[in-house]
Structures are given as structure tokens and as C-alpha cells.
Amino acid sequence: MEDKTTETIIGCAMKVHRALGAGFLESVYANALAHELEKTKITYTREAKIDVLYDNKIIGEFKADFKISDHLILELKAIENLLPIHETQVVNYLKATDIDLGLLLNFGAPSLQIKRKYKTYKKPPSQAVRLHQRSPDHPVNP
Image 1 (spheres, helix red, strand yellow):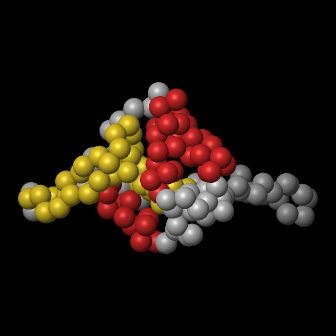
Image 2 (cartoon, one colour; image 1 turned 180 degrees about the horizontal axis):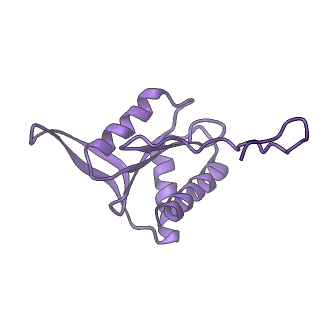
């Protein structure tokens, strides 16, 4: 379910970016993305309040741009380029919740920038492995 929902959300974001391009405020992209998500019947909460706990005490709060059901956080940006601090922000949001997956979407670049972030580190999929053909001079070990 997670992959299908994530791919649907990315598709919605791409549709928004293709239609609007770069240059608008983040709120414009958020409104357009909300409209696209409604058309797909994906359940979400905008500006979802999430408490930050330290030593079992609430020490602050943040508002996630979008919380999809209870399994995904979306953080939107409308800036020229994403920086590592933006990725760290999403990971920290995940750490403050029981949610493991976050999407960072930047509408401000010429092409939509998408970063998938996890609460617990997941190794990226490996690159395609080259297959070696057997030759009489260079046998391949099984």
C-alpha cells in the first residue's frame, strides 16, 4: 500500500509542477497538491500538529505540511535547490512521530525535486549489476 500511495502522491506533485512550473509561493503548490490529492481520494491532514517530546515532556511542536493517513509525512518547499538541512528536517519530523516515511517535494526548481526519507536508515537500492558472460578464457564462478 505504501508504494502505491507514494507513487500516486508523486504523480500528483508532478502534475502540479508541470502545470504551474517554478516561481510560486509554497502555499500555492500546497493548495494545488491538496486539490489533486482530493481527486485521488487520498486521505490527508494539512498543517498537522505534531508534538516534539524530550524526556517524556512536550518541548515544542511543528506542523507537517501534509500528513497522509498515519503513515506518511509530506514536506513541501518552493526554493531554488534542496539542501541537506531540508532532508534533516523531514527525518526529525519522522523521529517525532510513529511515521517511518517522509517525502520532501521541492516545486521551486526547474524540475520537481523528490527525496524519500525514512525514520530508520534504509540503504538505497543497488545499481544494476552487470552480468558477466562466460568465456573459455574467463570462467565465472557460480
